[in-house]
Image 1 (cartoon, rainbow, N blue to C red):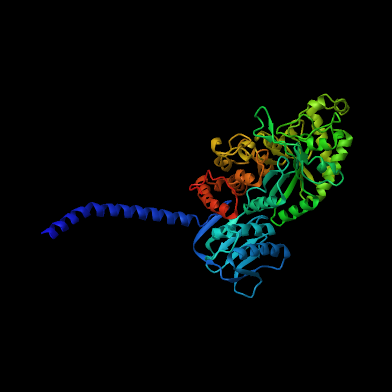
Image 2: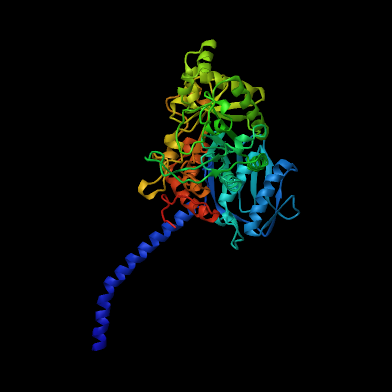
Length: 556
């Protein structure tokens, strides 16, 4: 009886229990299915997103030894060797070019593909890459790395199955110019970090590194003809503590210095070239030049003495447009041009107060002699002289959009930073334009709530705002849109004293800039990008990148 009653009670108690278990099981099944679907979607975790991608069933598995078939051309084999070395270090797999082993990767030259484009076809049997140029091969391998397990981004050997999902990708960039600026004047960045920064840009198929080398707070490049530019101009006596708007100003009472020798510059240029990144140097003229004035006071209107900037902002002392000043900068730019093979040389042109020129007898006489309207036209006259010299060397100038204020120099490319108006005006005047409006492209602005963020310049530039940006303004006429050459992210370092802090402000927003520059606007999708970005956070961890975690779903 007791047994029967016990059994009966158990049976009665089990009905709701079974129902609960059934519900729980269903929930687990739903969650498991969602995870599997998420993982399936996450197999194709490529940033920036390709122009065209067809996902297929199956995967290609790498053997311990495998060959790469390609035409014998050193321009292509050097790119493959870089990939082979990186892949072997983490996988232990030996890929050999033109090996007698069974071929696993085939590289074909196809002149019908866009210059920086590629076609990547992965089947269970092999991987086929078609390109028209070495740059296309480099970018195809960047995509291949992202299709591999995340461990490809680790720094040591990983004993896992090395495979990539079957897929067909046809890809080419939306814009020819995909850049990032790094300011090293306010805070100097060592060569090792600059090379790491270049590696990260290359990983996301960016192709321009804008190196801001001079400003009021420091001259960071050796010029052999003028040694005082570094022995004096690279050293400031102290640096502001806290934000520039804080009053009274507080300083650290510590000397700050640093510059690159020409040998170091050549090393970095060569490093970038192997990663298909062109370095565009910037030498500020005529404003933001206190470092040069402190070293050579005769370059100014008053003759000095001048002191290096120890805090951030815009200073009234600027270069005086004398013939001797122009000759000085022609000599400086001659050495710059010899060091940097870039088509473009950036000469600044921004934030140049005119107060010294208004009170300078030479400047006022020059305005009268040349029939200029005002000091804004005097700046245009100055910049036109510099442009003529740069053009005589077979190069072209880039300048900030303030260069429009006094009339454009004949052949300048404009970087539109204050807003999009400068870029629109330049394009309508048939001048090439790089879009970098601070509202979307200045990565020294806040990306998270200020109470959770380290000190920054100010302003809000969240990840989604960066991602949603389109460098082609809706208001620009269709026939003028060809003058918009691309987009650039800007890292000004007033509040970024270290490489780690530069990384924090750059990533993940730099990946959004990369997709803005590479992916056709109609292919962009925020939700899709955000999903892929979650995998990118894992890669940041593996690469030792100090990325901001605010947009990470599951924080470290």
